Image (cartoon, rainbow, N blue to C red; front, top):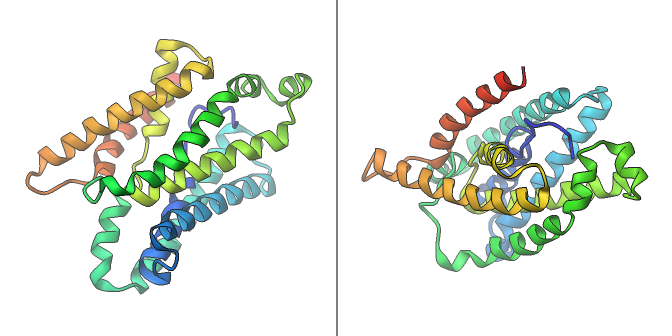
Length: 249
């Protein structure tokens, strides 16, 4: 959608928006809709962050792909500042759990909760997969996609909403686990090419495998304590980010 190899939910501020919504639910509003409260508010935060990034990019004239990421990073800092204020104003007894959750982890996962992320991931993921031809066309540029009969603006917004929905709900249950969405598609493209009909499912599979390995490492390094997975993926992802930047130059 952005034609930018460095764009992923973490760098574009979408994960931060999901975190803001979830923190507000956990520390301030309470679970007024039961277990659905956190994922719904996380989705709202992720969607709001997405719209803020697009608005900031348009207002500042950030039409290039690289400047879009800069707009996302700026919005991410602003949203996380707001999230930190929510933590500061929240119940001190609950902040420890929230801080660990902000770094990402599966230590609080329960089998009974899997129905909620699965109910979002399956239909949204299958819809994105079904749109692989349109996604391939969009990667060639808006003019090319429009010449093929794709309603560019509406389709881009639909994809952003689907991405924000998936990201927000996943963040609500696992916390912020960054850089997986940045690394896996690039590795898959090196192996399977650029057709999104292959990239999307293979990225999901390799991302899941990588997350399990990162979780295993996080549980072993500081046993019996669980290190947040976000620490592990952040270290690996940061190095990958530098490699990707060097490769582009």
